[in-house]
Amino acid sequence: MDAPASSGESAQPTQPAAPSPAAQPSRGSILIVEDDRLLRELLMEKLTRAGFSPREAIDGQQALAAIEAQTPDLVLLDLVLPGMDGFQILREIRSRKSPIADIPVFVLSNLGDRSDFQRAKDLGANEYFIKAHFSLDEIVDSVKWRLQQS
Image 1: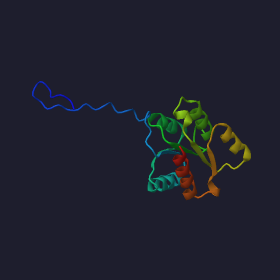
Image 2 (image 1 turned 45 degrees about the vertical axis):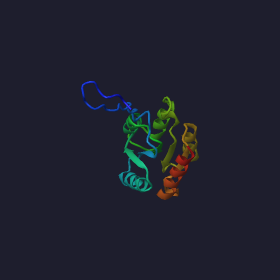
Image 3 (image 1 turned 45 degrees about the horizontal axis):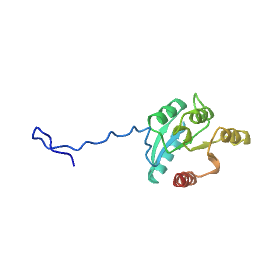
Image 4 (image 1 turned 30 degrees about the vertical axis):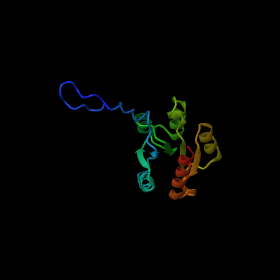
């Protein structure tokens, strides 16, 4: 316990400075990078109900700014986006210094060609979901599983 202040005031314990949000990611923070409003809102709702803290971005610039502002625990990334595509975003994430480069990235895309899958994997995608082949519940379950593993 701190000694009383000499001016007769009661001593106030000092609090250590809080770490910056980028340095200390919150457990369960998910960044959804998706330009389709309906899908983005549905993912936000499902993830929130599952106990996560989702944030959203609709393009590459917003995504990278959101990652720099507060490092998420996982990124759900569409590949077809306005401006910078998901491949460019993935390349940019993986080129950054840790811990940003180490964020798990799950691609959610309508691109189903083997070459798109391989390109995303080569750039460091941890998972690749073709939107039409998976339910939102299956995607949320995969997010839960991945975050329990780390």
